[in-house]
Image (cartoon, rainbow, N blue to C red; front, side):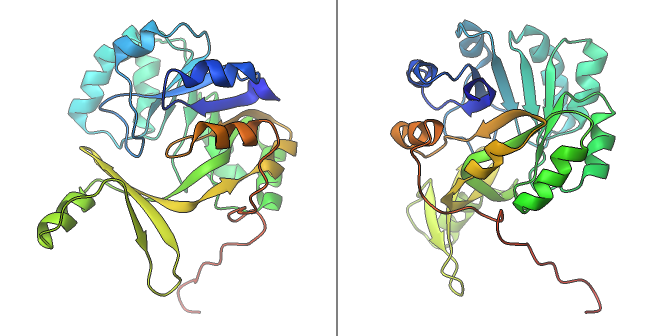
Length: 263
């Protein structure tokens, strides 16, 4: 079980801590190609890390210049694989003939086994299933997927991604001191969100730590993804060692209701 955890890294000192509980696979947000992660790592920093199972996160929607830059950068990365949001990177990796595991991670969109299998047939190693589904729905998807999938099991879940600098704009318009990250509350539901911005956009996270422990029971899973951003290391360790008891399960036990046109 422990060697199936794919854990994002905030601090290099945490590597030793996670390895002590059996974790062997780590995710490093790549500098200039990541949004929503407060700690990022350069190519040189990643290559110096002596871990055989290193993955790089690239979760920006990329423009032409960024893709051209990645064509130069990717062959220099000494990693096991990529976790990425822009499907265009699949073709880049194929043309460069790079031997990398490729995990497709478009937040919110991998919601049915038909489209998931279509993506997997394109040459992906795996993809991250949307966690806006119920446990029953995710189980059906993993059962019918043609390759092992990746499941988000812990962390703050992304609610929204904007390429705009929302915190910067907000502070300027209202002549306020900029706070980053910022906790906001929706007035009607009183639901809270953690907002984080960098030069490439703004992420809103649901400000409840998602506990996906029930997903650990499912079969046909390649990795269990743990996003440690904004979470103390001891809290992450509690989850990894089955000592985390908070009961926020997102949509696992609650269906998402969509209003269709005409209803």
